[in-house]
Amino acid sequence: MDARVRALESILVDKGYVQREALDEIVEAYETRIGPHGGARVVARAWTDPDYAARLAADATSAVAELGLGGRQGEHMVAVFDDAGTHHLVVCTLCSCYPWAVLGIPPAWYKSSAYRARAVFEPRAVLADFGTVLPDDTRIRVWDSTAEIRYLVVPRRPAGTEGWDAERLAELVTRDAMIGVRLADEPAAVGARS
Image (cartoon, rainbow, N blue to C red):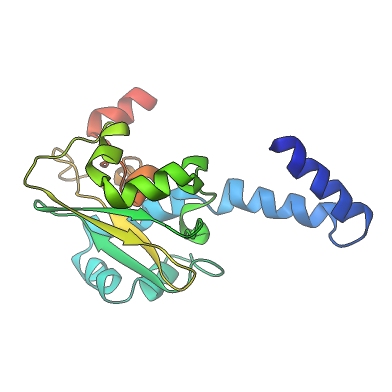
């Protein structure tokens, strides 16, 4: 796949359809300025600021824009909030619609046919594949992302994080948690990664 992408890139550059510098700038932007760290800031802010959480629930596109995020493939956002009885999972059954501007580059598995099919028919089994085992009475809601609406899961804030500021909390929020295949990391994970 990587070789095919490089070959296509070379052809497009050689024919003058794109400039290599422009492609490099796009890649650099998604690697450094745009990525799951932006979405993690959104979630951490929602965890620490009830007014922001209410704005995020009412109009996620505008609330996300307050933090300087959004734009192409980040417009028409909807935030769904996990709670004690409900867990949310995001999939794009048709292709790979995904909020790039908020979460960065989608993982390869998100685009796979297996994930797209199984997430709808057996979401609990898919979650288990990711190591996320939920109580039997937890309802799982699956959201089908489209070109018009893209979803952001706000996972439950982990216990033991009382008094943490938003910056520290953001370290617990992974891309996978904002897709819904995992829970937010536990506080011990921050120390383990340091």
